[in-house]
Image (cartoon, rainbow, N blue to C red; front, side, top):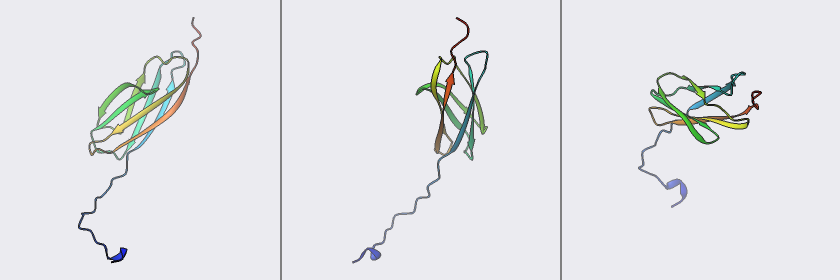
Length: 108
Protein backbone atom coordinates (compact mmCIF):
# COMPACT_ATOMS: atom_id res chain seq x y z
CA UNK A 1 0.00 0.00 0.00
CA UNK A 2 1.38 3.43 -0.81
CA UNK A 3 0.26 6.74 0.63
CA UNK A 4 -2.08 7.44 -2.31
CA UNK A 5 -4.14 4.36 -1.45
CA UNK A 6 -5.11 5.58 2.01
CA UNK A 7 -8.70 6.70 2.38
CA UNK A 8 -10.58 8.01 5.34
CA UNK A 9 -14.23 7.93 6.31
CA UNK A 10 -13.97 10.99 8.56
CA UNK A 11 -16.28 13.79 7.50
CA UNK A 12 -14.57 16.96 6.39
CA UNK A 13 -14.85 19.67 8.99
CA UNK A 14 -15.42 23.18 7.72
CA UNK A 15 -13.31 25.60 9.71
CA UNK A 16 -14.50 29.17 10.06
CA UNK A 17 -11.80 31.83 10.25
CA UNK A 18 -11.43 33.87 13.42
CA UNK A 19 -13.06 37.24 13.92
CA UNK A 20 -11.44 40.36 12.50
CA UNK A 21 -11.20 42.80 15.41
CA UNK A 22 -9.79 46.32 15.27
CA UNK A 23 -9.53 48.94 17.98
CA UNK A 24 -8.76 52.59 18.45
CA UNK A 25 -7.91 54.14 21.84
CA UNK A 26 -8.02 57.90 22.30
CA UNK A 27 -7.24 59.92 25.38
CA UNK A 28 -9.36 62.64 26.90
CA UNK A 29 -6.71 65.38 27.08
CA UNK A 30 -8.03 66.83 30.34
CA UNK A 31 -8.23 63.48 32.16
CA UNK A 32 -6.52 60.12 32.17
CA UNK A 33 -9.58 58.43 30.64
CA UNK A 34 -9.41 56.57 27.35
CA UNK A 35 -12.25 55.92 24.95
CA UNK A 36 -11.70 52.57 23.28
CA UNK A 37 -13.64 51.82 20.10
CA UNK A 38 -13.67 48.20 18.95
CA UNK A 39 -15.02 46.98 15.63
CA UNK A 40 -15.82 43.32 14.91
CA UNK A 41 -16.32 42.32 11.28
CA UNK A 42 -18.75 39.58 10.24
CA UNK A 43 -19.44 38.26 13.72
CA UNK A 44 -22.52 36.21 14.52
CA UNK A 45 -24.66 37.97 17.15
CA UNK A 46 -24.45 38.22 20.04
CA UNK A 47 -20.81 39.27 20.38
CA UNK A 48 -19.11 39.39 23.77
CA UNK A 49 -16.18 41.78 24.04
CA UNK A 50 -13.73 42.02 26.90
CA UNK A 51 -11.42 44.99 27.50
CA UNK A 52 -8.06 44.43 29.18
CA UNK A 53 -5.54 46.99 30.43
CA UNK A 54 -2.07 45.51 30.91
CA UNK A 55 -3.63 42.04 31.02
CA UNK A 56 -6.22 42.88 33.69
CA UNK A 57 -9.90 42.60 32.78
CA UNK A 58 -11.49 46.08 32.93
CA UNK A 59 -14.91 45.63 31.29
CA UNK A 60 -17.07 43.13 29.41
CA UNK A 61 -19.97 43.90 27.06
CA UNK A 62 -22.41 41.73 25.14
CA UNK A 63 -24.05 43.27 22.10
CA UNK A 64 -25.53 42.74 18.66
CA UNK A 65 -23.71 45.80 17.28
CA UNK A 66 -20.47 45.54 15.30
CA UNK A 67 -19.03 48.70 16.91
CA UNK A 68 -18.43 48.85 20.65
CA UNK A 69 -17.29 51.70 22.89
CA UNK A 70 -15.55 51.30 26.23
CA UNK A 71 -14.45 53.99 28.64
CA UNK A 72 -11.23 52.83 30.27
CA UNK A 73 -10.75 53.88 33.88
CA UNK A 74 -8.07 56.30 35.06
CA UNK A 75 -4.89 55.14 33.39
CA UNK A 76 -1.70 55.75 35.38
CA UNK A 77 1.14 57.61 33.64
CA UNK A 78 3.35 55.54 31.36
CA UNK A 79 2.99 52.99 28.57
CA UNK A 80 0.17 50.46 28.74
CA UNK A 81 -1.27 47.72 26.56
CA UNK A 82 -4.98 47.87 25.73
CA UNK A 83 -6.47 44.61 24.41
CA UNK A 84 -9.97 43.80 23.17
CA UNK A 85 -11.01 40.16 22.81
CA UNK A 86 -14.22 39.15 21.05
CA UNK A 87 -16.23 35.91 20.97
CA UNK A 88 -19.26 35.68 18.71
CA UNK A 89 -22.41 33.59 18.97
CA UNK A 90 -20.85 30.86 16.78
CA UNK A 91 -17.84 30.51 19.10
CA UNK A 92 -15.38 32.24 16.79
CA UNK A 93 -12.93 34.57 18.49
CA UNK A 94 -10.39 37.26 17.74
CA UNK A 95 -8.63 40.14 19.36
CA UNK A 96 -6.55 43.24 18.88
CA UNK A 97 -4.07 45.15 21.03
CA UNK A 98 -2.43 48.54 20.98
CA UNK A 99 0.04 50.43 23.16
CA UNK A 100 -1.06 53.73 24.69
CA UNK A 101 1.03 56.40 26.36
CA UNK A 102 -0.63 58.08 29.32
CA UNK A 103 1.03 61.41 30.20
CA UNK A 104 1.90 62.42 33.74
CA UNK A 105 -0.84 64.56 35.26
CA UNK A 106 -0.20 68.29 35.30
CA UNK A 107 -2.18 68.54 38.56
CA UNK A 108 -0.26 67.59 41.70
